Image 1 (cartoon, rainbow, N blue to C red):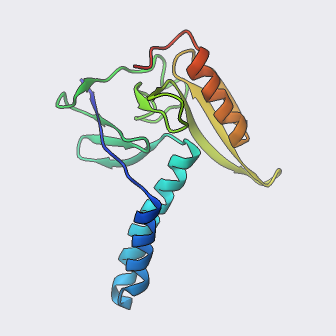
Image 2 (tube, rainbow, N blue to C red):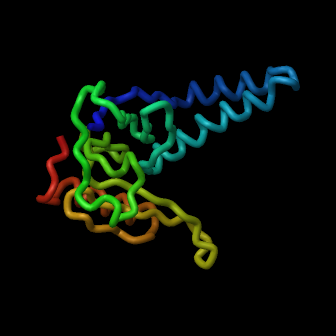
Length: 165
């Protein structure tokens, strides 16, 4: 039975500046590896600031969400994992399929409404995001970031279908 734990993720501006400095000062033969490490943290910082939840890292028997939630395949975690009903029907990835995500958009510790997808619309020439409520199963559809974030905040505050603690 899957279980959950949380990893502390600190992607501060200081860490990003430190990674950039290490990259800038490195000898040429080390630059490629340092560039990938820097890119990892820059992207994670961007995803977290956008409120985007998805399976960002996978390891042996563990899947990591951008919010710090870790889904473990065994029972060695701190909390039992609660599966979202009909998760496959909604097209959720492994970490999005479980409840108790930390809220990346603020206002509360946990969130039942997550921004789960992102795409770039070439027709409109803008980024679009898709919100999903784990409680009632509604989706925002691909809309602007502001509209998806508003959808998530409204469902976190008002959706009567999910216990987010």
